[in-house]
Image (cartoon, rainbow, N blue to C red; front, side):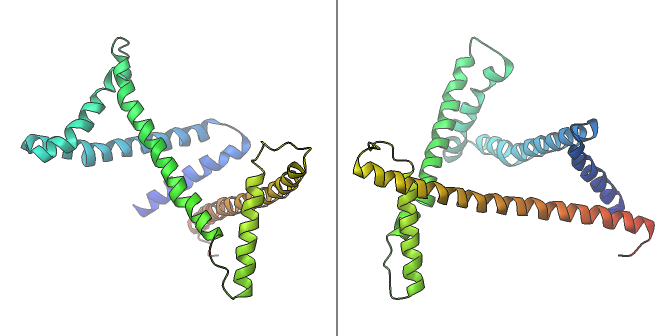
Length: 215
């Protein structure tokens, strides 16, 4: 059984790597298989862990279950006219969609403020302390934050004295942004190369194992 799984893994790996030579039927088959398996797995998980527990809870008739599951089920039913193409009642789907997008936007904004902006502000305003390296790091962080924010400040006239200062700070901030993006890109590329190396080693080990060659 393990050998069969390894054969399938090798075939799919080669199919995905064939994208290097351009779009081809082998890559498309692997792509469609991945999408189909992902959607199938999501449907099975949603059916067994969301829909069936909701139906069982509603069948008990408990008030708490009705309050927890009845409203989401009702909102989900409102999506059916949009899915089946009923134009007369398709406007009903706007209600749950608006709720989903509104809650999603609120979570995204609150997550950005609580998880990114507020910690950045608090870390920039921390006490310097007595350690020279900590002082240098705190000052670098504070100055870097200010000059990067200056790169998005467009309301000062560029001809004025304040505008020239902001323009200089914005230029420095743009360079810092490019450096940060370069680090992010390098980290992402390193992750992809690590995954590629692991897959190539897997395929090579499988081929050598079939051929009876020990590395």
